[in-house]
Length: 164
Image (cartoon, rainbow, N blue to C red):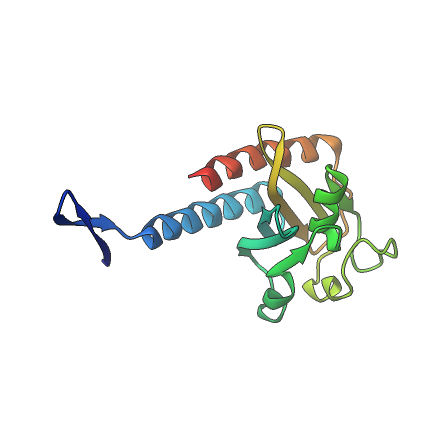
């Protein structure tokens, strides 16, 4: 385990490395994603964190995405793609079949995921959007109002983890 040394009243002390906290957060987010994918019978899940200053979403955790797509979804501008639209519109975005969708919401590379039905909701800290939580299933699926509400509730749990 690494440690950051600092002086405290002239005495050098060890302080736990911030990477340890980050690793615990990543593990908690991944566990949350795995549980919700099981609950929703879905194959892919993502959590993005919003950088409000730069208007970018940064991938914090994912389960099930093909390796070639990780670079594509690593950073998403607000207003682009499904997650970017969630932030721009301040509401959930759902697509019944990503493979045949022609709305223009999804990025062109999104079809490479093999996802049919997709649902992405804002992660809120109080009333403020701090990120997005998205799931996808290989089958065509129209997510219900109740499923959307459930995913938003799970988003509140994600916010607690992100707050650390």
